Image (tube, rainbow, N blue to C red; front, side, top):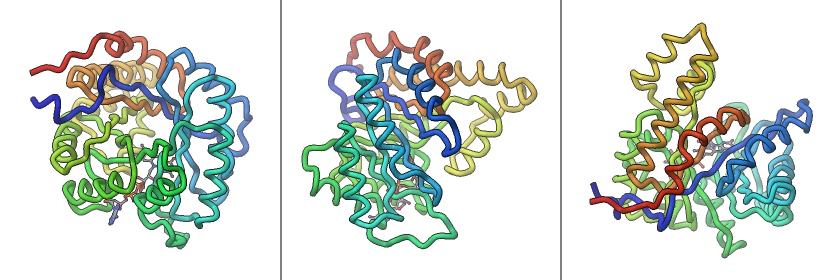
Length: 296
Ligand code: FAD
């Protein structure tokens, strides 16, 4: 096991969280409830997703990032999806993110909406990354990566080669799509390091909280549901509380194994459920503060 090759962190792994803006008609208070529940976790940053839908509020990500930084004193990372944006739109978003004092931007292409033609300025996330890098030379730019490959790539190797372009364009940290089998992550990590990608890569963990959302998310991302997760979904299909409890244990075990393998960071998809995130953090927090010794 080649610790040096797979992992880039120097001291301890990052622990980061992701939230999404509340739906347009939801009360603004719901995001405060979410953030109140997450602050005690002392994450390295909280990232805020960016809505691609026609009805999405384009200022929501910046406003929530502003709150995270200014009111909670936690680093904020803003997501930005660019395939439906012009260069002027991106400049406007960057100005809002400056006001929010974001510590980084997660530069994304976004998912294709079949009813909408892309603008064709930022075709790939690497185009947006290069554009932001030119305008904000010192900013941390993050990128997404896919341990089981992006659904549109024909092979994992092709996807990793494209990922290298994103890093060459200026991405300084990567965050992975969800996965439920750590072996898929380790296989991807070896390919990425072999391709010359040396930036830190954080593992994206999405706890199983209810069967419907696992089915929806894994089919959208074309991620595998391995046998132990399939078993949980079947065994507790009529018992959501127990399924959630099993999901917390499963995510905690995934994290423990990743940290034991010296992962650069864990990015927890909180799905705006702070109680679940807190219970996972309670299980694993000591692993993050213990000295990290490279192992032979
Ligand atoms: P890209 O990096 O552009 O990759 C998309 C496809 O194009 C891949 O198949 C890749 O291999 C290929 N490709 C990439 N670069 C090139 C190139 N230069 N030449 C040829 N082919 C290339 N969606 C949202 O709407 N809002 C969010 O806030 C959001 N946050 C996310 C956070 C994380 C951590 C992740 C993993 C995903 C997130 N997504 C979000 C979903 C994301 O927008 C979709 O997965 C989208 O389909 C791809 O975005 P990308 O930035 O990875 O695209």
